[in-house]
Image: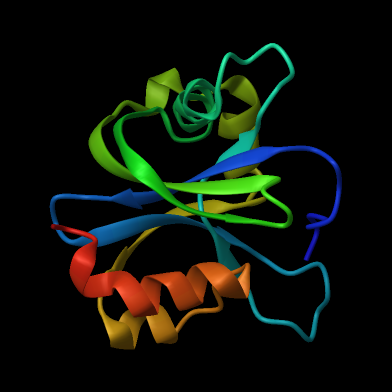
Length: 146
């Protein structure tokens, strides 16, 4: 996996749910030819000048996906609270609002934005990273839309 879990940089990620009972994830191809693609929650870095994680997450989702979201609540934190995951509802997507960097990354095949049905079979069929996110989704699937 390209990202280092243990860097000192704070990150905010979205468990981004749609009204169609799907989750939006980022599919990345592994750097190693013998490893399968993996899926991560969208989001990114929390900058020192961000007033809070929610502001950073909103900015990152706009840049990465062109998404307008409603942040519902924090779901979990990992890696000594350096990474936080927030349950979010997708309101709208406008691809023209993606950053130039994100548009280029998608065009170059660096990652794909995908929707996965939120059920045990489809979630277990893909390689979600970090493993704690997969475990959280499987344990809380029935509660995410309540």
